[in-house]
Image 1 (cartoon, rainbow, N blue to C red):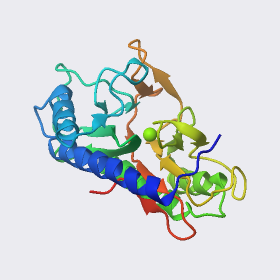
Image 2 (tube, helix red, strand yellow):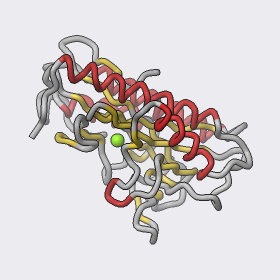
Image 3 (cartoon, rainbow, N blue to C red):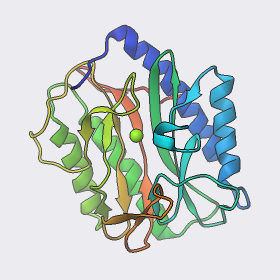
Length: 249
Ligand code: MG
């Protein structure tokens, strides 16, 4: 069931989004050679707590950290720890959310550690572009397939694999609500977008195959072929005009 939000509720979600966005920004600024993913996670945790919010992911289905931090061939759900040390040339996907006043924000971005390869730059640029192309289709009256197909086409035209095993989602008083927001689809198909819908749009794009597998820790999702993956996400509210990006500092 898709839960529509009132104007007042969307204002509350802006606060969750602001905290989520700033936490992501701070975590991204910390990406540098020699830092561990646990240290990055702590930066995000400390900021979220300092704002009177709580990390949305911490203990969600047993997830043990504030942020999912996924390096290079890791797609999503990487678990921060003090053995994962970031090095020059890595691409580091950070996904995190915060809950305050009963509402969640959720956002992600892939950050470069120092100088990265032209191939990695191209993948990250394309994935970020795909997110914004998806956002441009997130307008009342359009359908979910308009978002997914636009994201898919942008990335497929560059030869990338568009992850199908995981999708964006509705978001609000729960971190994950209906509907699923896939990064594929047919224009004009799928659920109709209505004012007051709040959704997280999150292309996960692979350099090679779209296929993924889950590591033995039962969390970390990696590309099946070991090639790179990038991930960008915003939480947005649907209106009759341009969507409102809620995950903004
Ligand atoms: Mg999400």
